Image (cartoon, rainbow, N blue to C red; front, side):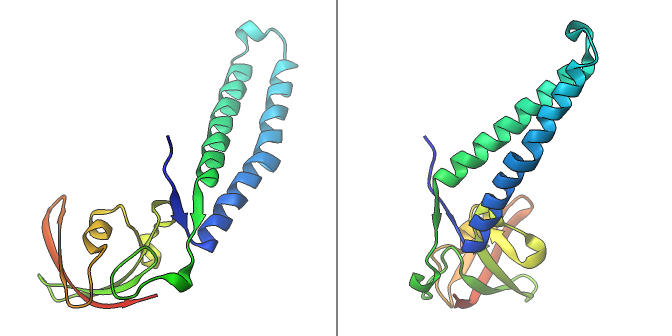
Length: 157
């Protein structure tokens, strides 16, 4: 049984574009590769044919997984988000109490996480530690190299 995943409009659009690319571009290329390998003769000793069939199988698995993800995906209505506590899509400014460094993060679904652009997954240790906290709260979380403490400085939508 699959669980519901929440996405931004941008995240859902990327998923749909990837699925369309796999179906409209990659799938025909895989079929063409199989046809070309089949034309090369005896299939029992044709490694190129076996490789093309395996690549097609992996592609079909990826397509099925994306279709399943999209079937359980829900769009987050950003206008309804509560800014009194940290939720998915919250823009959070936090201060590391160990070194007084301030950081800005946006909490997003796991598939949309991108640390370079400041988007962290709600399933990450820091994301889990921040969820449900309010401005002024101290979030304590265990990460692979110890325990971190962050003060929530601000929450925005």
